Image (cartoon, rainbow over all chains, first blue to last red; front, top):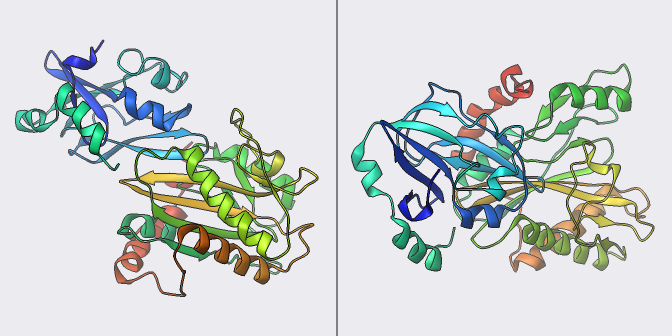
Length: 129
Length: 214
């Protein structure tokens, strides 16, 4: 679904890629490796309006819960129906079968403010969290 | 729970250690992890506490069902930088507690690393990095939440078989975590921002929307 090199990335390690009028959102390969074995995922409801940086989903691995943030503002138009029943997809296929939700971005500027793949790779060398 | 989340939100890079006190005589309660179904937690609490009132609250952290009847319940807020994984955090915190207990004359074992399970009852078995008595009985379990570079650890230390009263265990635990963090934890209030935030969050933790969300 999403070649990492065509995605944009938030500093909180979510990826997003345009798909028609909407965009698909997921967790970066780097972040899923740090979080390790995902056992639960709570996704936002379709229709929910999110602001950039707002906690949109929750993930659990090894008795640790993590917030997943909206990389851009917009309305959730779909969620991955396979993820709640098979949360390991986040680890197994972070850029394809493990996508979280689709969002209709409300701001092109927010999309453009995110890092491209090369910038994200540089960010990973220096980021503290 | 509300204060723990408020401290997580307002930690500002600080390390904060606090102890829970449960209502009742003797005090008791039950907490359950963010993803645990409420019905499962209720059933477990009913099996443990019978027909008594069942004080139950969903935690912001992960993990299973924990009975707080005679345990030392505590929480620890700390900076959680990359690239620390949850396993690394558990190991660090539990090694700190282990050192504190050792200083009080109590020997424990850090449970070896292996695959984590999904035990619904926290103390039904040891998970990797839990602390156990030498006979393998679990004495310390914990659960985590990470939010914007800060971590919240919620822990339960069972005193049975350790030979120390709760107050002495609390001092040992605080000393161990202080040494591990190279920081002394002084008694201090949460601060006005965290107090205000906790007041706002308290109603959520009392609500069915939160506790029965699944």
